[in-house]
Amino acid sequence: MKRSQRFSLNKKISIIGGGACALMLACELDTTQFDVSVYEKNAAPGRKFLVAGEGGLNLTHSEDPAGFIERYTPSDFLKQHFTHFNNHDLVKWINDKGIETFVGSSGRIFPKNGMKPVEVLNVLLDAIRQNRVTVNTRFEWKGFAPAKRLVFEQGGEERLVSSDLVIFCLGGASWPVTGSNGSWTEYFSQKKILIKPFEASNCSFKIHWPSQIINKIEGKALKNCAVTCGDKTISGEVVLTREGIEGSGIYPLSPRIREQLNASGSADIFIDFKPAITHDVMLQKLEPRSDQSYTKNISERLNLNPLHLALLKQFVPKDEFLNPEKLAQHIKAFKLTVTGCGPLEDAISSVGGIVLDEISEQFELKKMPGYFVLGEMLDYDAPTGGYLLQSCFTMAKGLADYLNAEKTL
Image (cartoon, rainbow, N blue to C red; front, side):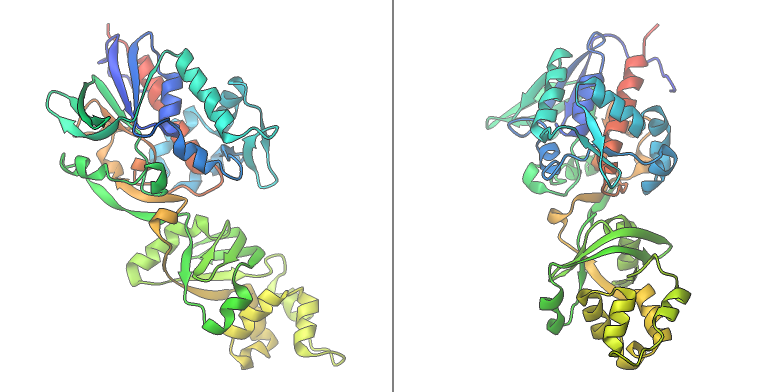
């Protein structure tokens, strides 16, 4: 990595925030070179890390690195660091800490033997203690002060902290219950750092369902389908809710859906109910039989369940439903119109924050030398499946190695 040879021994590094980026930094920064302190607003670090682990702590994904990096929107800013520390490297790093992992059926990677998120967090916190990093809790960052000092509120009192280098790991605006609410943006705006407003990502999307169908579809899922928005198609599951849709088959399409919503106020998605069956084969299966009703015939021969039929009968004109050619087209590309995103506070992640043009290759603010910003504070998008957590660990490991390698002659 590029070296500027401008950091000297025993300089103080302040890490603001206690999420995934901060945990990796605190494990990896060389405390024989730096005096490292973490400042966390909650009673303990890793709160969002624990919330993300409810239902299973998805650490990363087993996908081939060449495809993995392309999951990010955009991906160029991360490629250098991902080459240095990719998903396979993260698994080895985690294993070396004594945390065994396994690959789930979806390709996602989890801790083995039923290890709970809090147990994983405790392993990392123990590594941080062994690295002689100071962790300060209930320190809420309140802005910048002259002479490269930071303002904190702690115990109802104002505290000023001086630092040689500052690394911000403050998160985005999803899950505000964890303390990650994006309120930090005002302090950076005061410094003329360009900020893009936060938007929901990996979230539910609104569909205006006809009232007569809601009770038939609410809580049900379209399994093993393929969903297309714009030029991107994703395979997965789509869960239907009273307000709209969510699930693994829709979350990765968030960037395309948002783009259309921002441009025109709505977005069209197309669901292939039967991606394993070609259009021509489907037409053959739809040939009429005289010994049973039309609906029963298509249901049995195409394995359409009551949810498929309810949607088709509601949204497809009757004359097209009864026309095998038209029906096949609808089954292969069932159109739904998205009218909006679900609430930002309910989203799995957010997009927006500090514009990527504001940072160097090493995540240093160009307008504020010595200040670095990592993770969900930056304006990029990552799908679910361990990709967001991986990106945070990748950025932090890259920056830690970069700083550790900087030696003054």
